[in-house]
Amino acid sequence: MKNLRLPGFGVCVVLVFLPPSLSAQGSRMVFPSLDAVPASYQYARRLALNGSAYWQDLAEAALWASSVNAGPGAEEKAATYMERINSAAAELSAAADLPADPKERGEYVLVFLHKRFLKSYSEYQTRVDEIFISGRYNCVSSAVLYMVLGLSAGLDIKGVMTKDHALITVNTGAESIDVETTNLYGFDPGNRKEFHDAFGKATGFAYVPARNYRDRVEINGIELVSLILSNRIAVLEKGNRYTEAVPLAINRAALLSAGESSDGQNKADFFEDPRGDTMNRIFNLGAYLIKTGREDDALDWAEYSGGLFPDPRWQDFINTAVNNKLVKLIRTKKTANARTELSALKPRLSADHYNALDTMVLEAEAADMVNGIRNPGDVEAALSFLSRSWERLPAQAREEMRTAAVLKEAERIGRSKDWTGGMTWLNAAMERYGKNSRFESAFRTFRQNRVGQLHNEFAALFNKGNYAGAKASIEKALAEFSEERQLLQDLNLVNKALQ
Image (cartoon, rainbow, N blue to C red):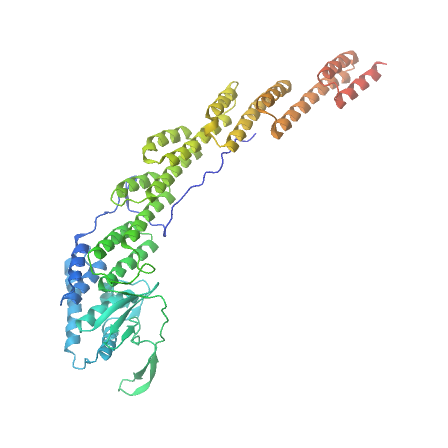
């Protein structure tokens, strides 16, 4: 008989985004900081003032969000990039051909940006500093740099966000004009623009088709800068570097906490709530720990971050981590350890979760006792355990395990070929617990084996010519099974031999 298998224990995993990788020391994880860096609040306050230096504050915040201020030589790098921006702003302001008309000026800034800095589009290149290093950009980094330089040139500019894109609008006083900053010809997309050769001669038209953004929302400068952090988080998660993403989410929330806000607009569909975004990243890290079998780290993470970031989901998260930890122990035949762990972790579980896990461990304990039936007395210990635990065990599991225990004992008896003892045991079990198909099938097998045993005893005597002994043997057998066809045939055979 095969060992009794418990009902399947699913390894529950709570997943929100892609699984990240970790930085670890020893056997336990080194957790990222859950405190926002002071700079995030400083930039929020400075940008909220919205003064004459707003574009410069925005530029500094964009470089900070791009992580320029991190690592060796951070201050020098930040100063270098700010000098590039200040120089570009000064060049724009001093340009003799800078149009006075806001619409023409807006297009002029876009052309200037592409000629000076924007070299090649790269979907995930969201950092402003990287534009100065390699010329690579995406919609966010190019939009941020356009806003900085456009504001320095006196334009009235807002950001625009869709579900998967960022762009700029320039308010001329008479109209608001979209600017697709990723394209040299992206000013007022949908309109034809003359294309000139090197000598200024018109040779045709460059055309950027307008996009029909039915779902769009206007965002301000600080919100546009925060998209740098959002995109960096996405890239980090895509590269399985989630411990680095958590602090970025916390800094993003701090940046948006005290800064200006776009009034009267519902950004819920596009612009993720900063706290919700932070909580998702925090739970992502926990999900990764559970997914990779690091339940102790997951529980430590819940304790470490749950106090600062309370959330109703923590209880389900803890339950999942404990569940998986217990399942691992049970599957490696360490059920006693599972019971010890559950007892130790009980204070961290809700009553409902504890009861469910207690039942799981109890089933494993009962299954261990049933599977361990090998010696006389083992079955009574297992059945006694089942009896004591009966009301706490699921109906199907307890019936299955009791049946398995009875059959395990029958199997043990059968190994000694005590078919009569096995039948006696099974009869007693059916009287005690009621009949079922498995009991009845096992009883038939034992009966057939006993009949075969009696027939073989008869046959051995008969084949030796001891017909008197053979007759005595078969008559004794018929006293046990008076109507068994095989035995009746044996009696008829021996009577003919004696005639």
